[in-house]
Amino acid sequence: MTRRPCRYHETDMPNATDFLRDLIRVRAMPGQEQELAERVRQEWRELGFDEAYTDEAGNALGLVRGRETGNAWLLLTHLDHVHEGDLSLWKHPPFEAVLEEGIVYGRGAVDIKGPLAAQTYALADLLARGERPRRDVWIAAVTEEEVGGAGAAYLVAHPPALIGAVIVGEPSNNQLMLGHRGVAHVHVTLHGTAHHASLRLPDNPLFALGELLRRVEHIDLPTHPVVGRSTLTPTQVVTDSGSENLTSNTATVTLDWRGSESEEQMRATLTELLAGLPASGEVAPMWTAKNTPGFATDPAHPLVAKVLPYTRRFHTESGLWSFATDGRYTHAASWPTVGWGPGDEKLAHTVREAIAVADLQAHAAALGELLVQEAP
Image (cartoon, rainbow, N blue to C red; front, side, top):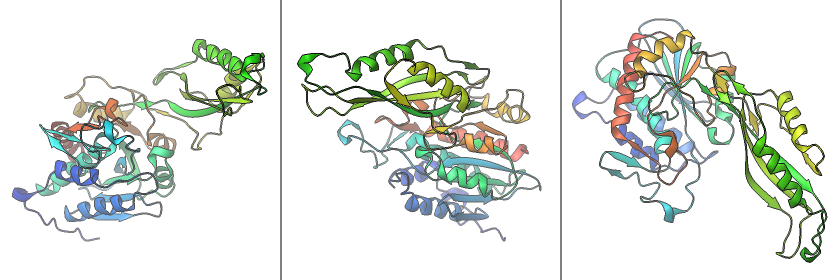
């Protein structure tokens, strides 16, 4: 395909900050990403990308051709974001993209529209200077990352090219990330018999829930050599009691499980936790919305050696994410995968979500250097 000419001259080139602010103004909940995908494609076309289109899953895909043939780089982000929550808690309205003292505020600023803008302009800045990456670079902003990763699942099943390496752009404070633990949400129901609260009978399921929570608090979970120790955390409790003076028949607790165990190991642990309790629960199969594995890239992998020199200007060592990413899909597809993105991950999903313009610019510059110099 003939490359589309860039319509901008270097002197009037838009920048990553302008693009980011436009992206924040488009609300894009999971399953509602079409408008944002079109805005992303529009930017890629106007910047002179060689291809810019949407696949059958609604993923936005762009291509900048390289100087050499061979396996391509994949820069991976996503389109969707979490709900904005209570608007009164935001200092700045979540979709107005306020720019104040070098910081852009808004839902998605750091997770993940900021990294998407930085990846886009790493490539745009090369084209504006008349340069090309060493190898083809595909950039993908996929759908439904926040609810299990349907877009990434489609992407790895229908790759646009032979992918040699993946950089997941989730926020990492510009630190190289080697992976993260898997995530499962396990629902355990404690059973009892509803009765008047004044009777204080022992078959109140909340007593059994208390024992389960004690066991969860003290459980000894395994440690993975790369991604670290597993955690099991209760997050929500729901009962079927409709009155303050009525006990419930059931109490259901959600356990957030972050680890590297197999399904079989998780089921054995759950059986141990529930032993002797009037309880039921199960671990969902892997690769469902309730249970997906993590990924871990060996620190000695050649990809780490290629990327680390460019991330060392920000952090001397590699790190790990505490949350899950679509890197689990690319890693499972045997595409070598690391993480690297601008922004503070601790601001993701909060009403303080924001990203510094300087972080966007620094990431775009360093990523552009890597893509010019390195083959995956």
